[in-house]
Length: 181
Image (cartoon, rainbow, N blue to C red; front, top):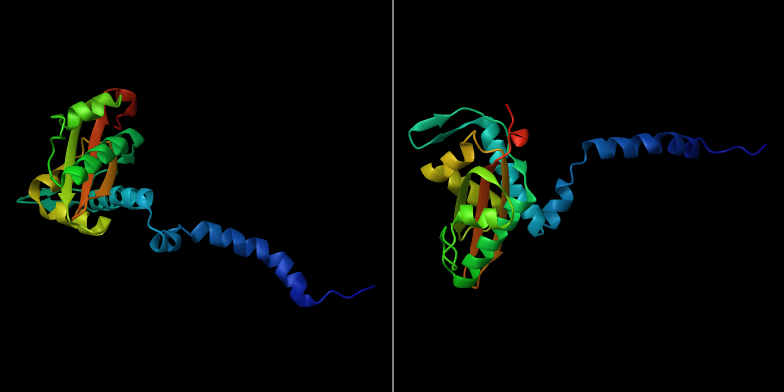
């Protein structure tokens, strides 16, 4: 009978456990750090917003206690992307798009039936961390982020010739089945 080296037996027995451990503890951040594509950067904005919501924040003179995180919504992300692209193409920061539409109208055009919404915009920031930190230092933007009435969010950015433009759209859908208690 042929003897199998102990190292090979050890490897075959423990390799599946090692792979399982890696899958349990690896969150993909190492990949994301090396290749931060648009979707990764945009979802990072909402992740940072949720971290702030879970901690609570001071917005101007008002303290907001911790609140539930918002859920990523592709339709809201699409609305954010359209505004970011519009701002980048015009090199102009604002809540009103070049067609005259405001956030509520843009969201509704995409089929999102909202009960309430909010929108944060920013320009010139290079990373999700920079833009979310700036929003948290601005009373109105911070209040949008911390508003417990918002249940869903989408974010986007677009690079203009001179600056990068960021948009965060927060909303609560009209139908109560989406509203958390």
